[in-house]
Image 1: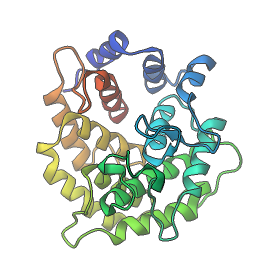
Image 2: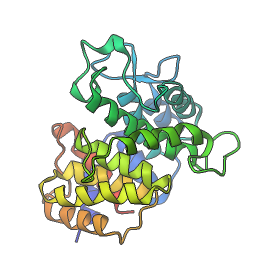
Image 3: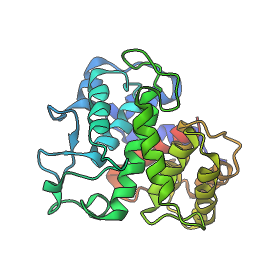
Length: 273
């Protein structure tokens, strides 16, 4: 079993102010102090996105999705900064339903965000589609919600789901990075394209034993966020894997260095709520 008390203790001991506020929201729904929210939103460009550390001052689809994940953990998707970011993401969708980074980032972007790379395009499409799915149904959003699947971004999310489904291979695999699988499966699940989502989830289940703790945590958190049941076979297997990989200090190892171990541990807590 996952030692949740130890995980909480790890975040308290090693996290910063924003991390601890994320923990409080995930555990109890405690509303963060305004200063914490301002800190989490810092650096937003005038058009609504956030730049990546490698992107200079140009807003990045990938970085904006990462920041929305942090704001979601603070209950802040209804604040003006997040709504502006979601609107920016929606405005960046290409005619075929996909997303790519700004061509001006071609010389700086890593492989998963490289403009013109089909693998990066599928990953960014699944990522942007996921956050527009979540943001479109957030109960704290500004303005009226739309009852359709996808909420206020219904048409955008539907096109994103179609773009993802089009790229699924006959065996359920997808021609992109691993993360595109769970983000795409989440988008398809929420769009009620259950057969397509199940095919991708079956492949994720096969790959689970070789996945890192960070990947397992992020996958489980994404699927739970769109309403996949906790008793689902894949999520049950994910919790077993996370229990096996929890460290003696209560945390989990990130794929991006020690500085991100708290982020990975928060993803586990989010997945197991």
